[in-house]
Length: 78
Image (cartoon, rainbow, N blue to C red; front, side):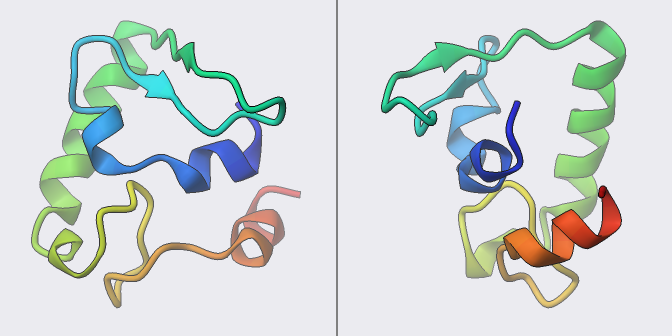
């Protein structure tokens, strides 16, 4: 998954049994296969971020409840 695709994921697209990336580089949708350990980590993240998610429906949010910026993520994962 590309960084921009991950940042564009709304929470509603990953809480299903078959997560979907809607906004791909070539404007297509595709299923997002997740290993069982990744799915477990995602579930834990969703529980931990639930109280912050009220401000935005983005999957990946800051402690302020706002979507993460590309530059922030790029700086952490070069």
